[in-house]
Length: 239
Image 1 (cartoon, rainbow, N blue to C red):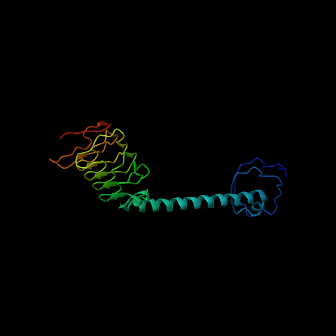
Image 2: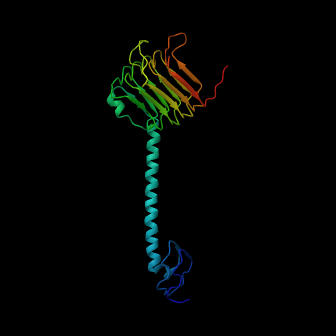
Image 3: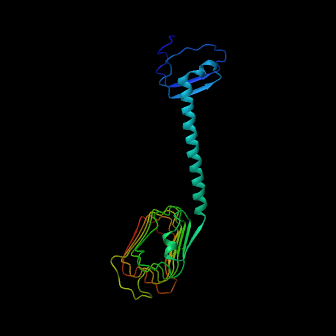
């Protein structure tokens, strides 16, 4: 073949076992090459275009390897974090919560600060369990537990998410509760008087839900006592 322009537009090159080639003169060949595989090709391996592409390929492969290692490291860190529990004892703890934890436990009489008007755990994608003690989040107007794919259990103590305790609360149209798109959720339990001044309760797309419990048996509840209650896309069984 001619020395110039031969193999110029070739994009993929695979050369193997040409050990005796003593002379190679392909001046402008392989100028458009995008992928190269070479093994035991003697003089062909000295072509500048092929050498440059091999160096480029190695850089790309090394960068890809580095990214994969970083992603794997991050995945392991997240898995480990999801096994841990965040114990909340103050507003500062709540504001600095690790979004990758698997369990959140809020102590009694906690987070009663007017700055926490919204309780939205949508970013806690690894959350499996949420426990809130009694008399917490007094001034929180909206609770959103939406799109938590791993959430299995929610437990809330007495007199939480209500401004006035023990049933003395006045309904507030700005106070809403949303529990949606949590496919693994099995249990939703809360103590008496919690959410008693909320006016909206929407529970939707929680097909694994087995238990909804508003206070202990034979005890006063008043949870969502006068609000609009919507249960959608649920499988309900009565025994």
